[in-house]
Image (cartoon, rainbow, N blue to C red; front, side, top):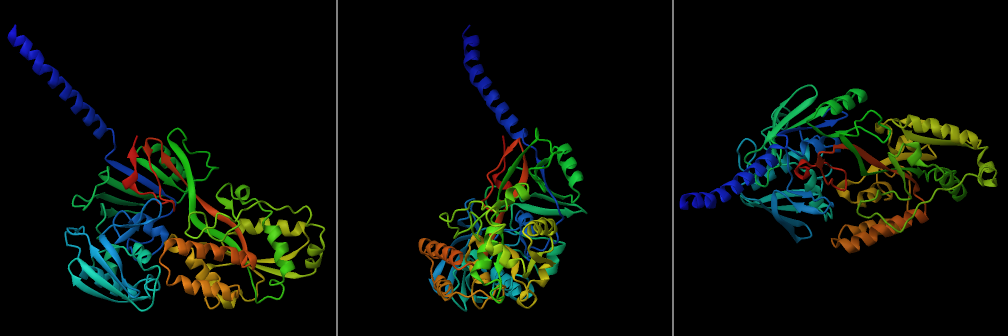
Length: 488
């Protein structure tokens, strides 16, 4: 009897333990060990220094930077443990210890020095790094960067510099070697296979293998995602995608932080006239871009997209009406004029829409599609109106004003000039305080609305499909990071 009682005493905790082990086992094995993300276009290079958003969003799994952005686009140390300015022209970094590249080499300050020196002359990041003068190695985990001029974006620039170990840049095309939480395995025609980095210096992702698949053909891409159980995310979809399996996927979107706009050419006597500007402002503000683009575009009254540092929430938008404009004296005055508009070549469907719109107003507007390489001051000098787009560098709007509104900028296609704007841009070079900086940027937004730089049209919405078996909080700029993907 005593033996049976004792057996019951031991049996109860054993049963509880078995149940707990079973629960843990089921939780662990309910997650797939391999997942896939499907894209609408192939990767153009495995070299992380072939810089483009298109490339970087995929290679972020292999490579890391000293500093990155958190999900709200605040600066976040990754391979650095600390960083800061010693004086206006000197910054110091301390590196995270015990970080290894995928080939087991240690990350050191000398690696960073070698990378910067190569990139300044041998990559398309060289223009971004033009304020970097020299790097001094203090010890294995400490270095100092000397600038040749004050640079308010110096820390943001480090978010764009993937840290890699290489003898020659070209070697990274066939043997990617970073510190990221996934390692390169192989590349086929439409797939890059990655596996988990067992020596990763921080928390590892939940999935052992990740395939990055590219299927340019729309129908084949959707069909593949519908049938393949390992697909967790899919790019190249829109609200009009009818063949997507909505029992398997949820359709999500957010701003991709890019915007499209019309610039007035101030070298044109016609375009710098206030009556001309007011008339075309009303014409373009009558277009419902959300309807026209099937919700991929969202109307805006600002040159910066929502979420970009410097966006001014006090500048509202509402659709204008063409009803009172059609027979107005302003329109009749322009009906005898020859007006020219340059638009990017990919906007061919928008060109068709605009031709019909201008015909209803009896306006003689010649629309000329141009390739990106043709967008320069010499080529655009003869156009009255210039359509262009912008995606914020470093999630900060300062680069927009420096490019398109600063008097001496090579990208100032509109020949726009405003001494007050030039002065504020000069002041921004030495402002680090974020509250002061955003006040200045929002003042710039108001100034270019008062003396019209042009006409903001729409900001782009990024659509993607996410498996309903997973949850994921994307970054404000739309980046999908597998570290934040969780099985439900």
